[in-house]
Image 1 (cartoon, rainbow, N blue to C red):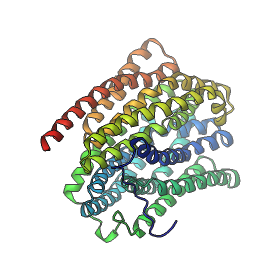
Image 2 (image 1 turned 120 degrees about the vertical axis):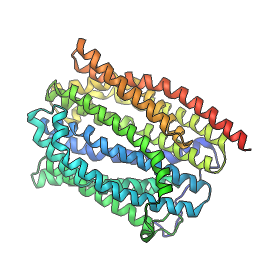
Image 3 (image 1 turned 180 degrees about the vertical axis):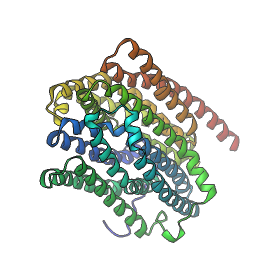
Image 4 (image 1 turned 30 degrees about the vertical axis):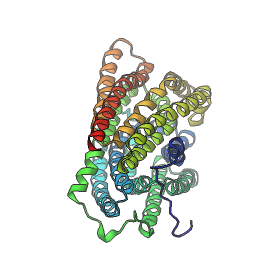
Length: 454
């Protein structure tokens, strides 16, 4: 990488679709490699350890996501604040917001590591984890939580870069460490003859290296978004802005993940074959979800920068174009995965029942993924407009409360695994309707404020 090269991207001018896509593409590839961390863990233990180990790794996803997604919400909030200062060309505000973000990350890394590590036995029991996978799941979680600081600092460093339009360098680091994780997984399991602890150590090491790389680049940068460590502090006013946007996002995502712990509990009662099939589904659907999360982040940054620059009409058009792009890409990927679902399931395990359940779960939900694409992209646009509270409330109602009510009621009459999977598209559909009307109302209110300020 050439020293001094400016990787930032100003999204306040140029064709809207091009700006959204150019920003989102590296995110899609980066998120793809991000998912490879845990997916490779599942592939390695499923093929070289045991089906119980696959079930153990898969069952930990909902628990890990509770804390990871909460912090991810904080990073999205920080990115939105940083994008506003960048779009407004306010170098002082940009610098202060970055240093406050780093300070918050240090505090939250310690807090979340302690919470995660010491809550392991309670959360596993809460999910009714079967005895034949309990010890493996606990071991994997304990090791994984010890590496939280690396994961958090990589994510926040990437969020800072993305806030100024730089999606390429976080991608380079993620590709490198994801490939490293593959080799380390195989090294620990096949050469050192470790089991589930080996893949956990491989993930922690890889994530730690990615954090060192991204923070080193931000520290050495000559640009206005560099990290100056002796200036790191937690400023009250900026913390309120960051947490005001990030906390609702993180709370919504973590509570949704927590509700998936209940969903995992409904799955666990059907035994390890269904658990392994559910693990196949959750690992695979995360890849289908990649363009959705990427376009949502693209919409947030695009809208934030343009609102900071006073370009309201362009910000509004950007959200619409982002939703349309999410539809096209999600439909194409869902169709491809639907067609090859059995083959994908067999990549994780050769156990016929696990493959059957994994295929069934995928083919039930894939045709309706376009609904969740609409939800998350509209939510991204709303956050860019400064409205993080309403999307949080909508997601909590549609994808937590109503989903749990659906599961509680329907499973009383039909106690089958497919009923558990069907709770996801049910929640997506309800959320989609509410999010659409929320977006319309927010656009109307913001438009009125913009006209009054002219």
